[in-house]
Image (cartoon, rainbow, N blue to C red):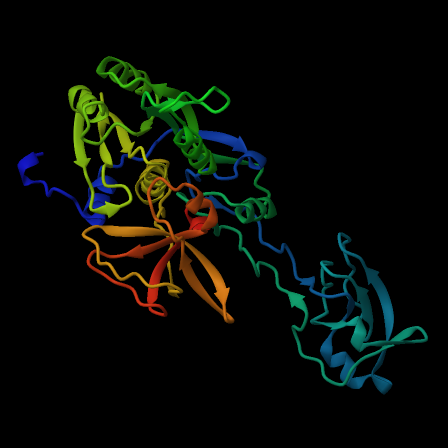
Length: 408
């Protein structure tokens, strides 16, 4: 790439196009028990071998019959001929009778309506039926949910609890999924200290390591944790070479322009740099490239910037690489419960919280938007997008990215 042709700060949309066009999805497939598939990506279309439900069954506790029989019955009373609990095999319905039936039980041959027990009255050895009966009422038809041969879960879908239940409903016990990516994680900075250790003057605890470990594990990736890397070219290069054992590398810090920021130079020495410096706030010093062919995503060192750039850039990249065919970020439009009067030269992502204000869901923002205020990410439940050069008036519609859709 000709560096002279690069804009000084690349817009996020252009960076995303470049980033996502470079993804090579994994082809490594493993077979896992269904119980272990939460969060995994399905490697092939899963087809059903059965109908669900496998036969017509009752949606209610009540009585089943042929609707026409009730029309000719004296006083609309029909005798009771059998009892059908769920899990049993019914006998064909005797003409001119009703059968006691329970929710989920198979509807017998000859019956075409189920009447709720609340609408019936037992009279001696028979059942008094209501005036109005509609053929098909309270019967769940065979194959109503799934027909044999249907695609139950398509290739490229991440498995949620509901997919686990759906797969179980058609008898799937094992599933072909893509092997979870291993992501190498490293933190740079001589000022970093691990939690639990004494904190010397001028040092800070390494929060980014734990934020990023949590984000990676929430998205079901395996991690190769390389800890803190010293601020020297030699240590940086050594750590990056070790990290090439993984499928992808994520780092925090070391990609700015200071004399002790060595990651950018190391990437250019060991591989190539595709992206550097984005027109976003927080997160300008984001970098993307490769180390000996292993994709590398370098996040800023400021805690909020690392958090935001992971969600906005690393998440969709890694999920697509994992085989997820729909890694897009979900957004909502909500009215602002704040004003933002200063237009920026970079697209901003404000830590925000959706909440009910005067009976309406609105979005508020944290008062201190400094990229070092990590507590703002815990106060909030999402990010508000402020486009370049844009101001926001209270009550104006804004784009809101909820965390809950960014952490799966």
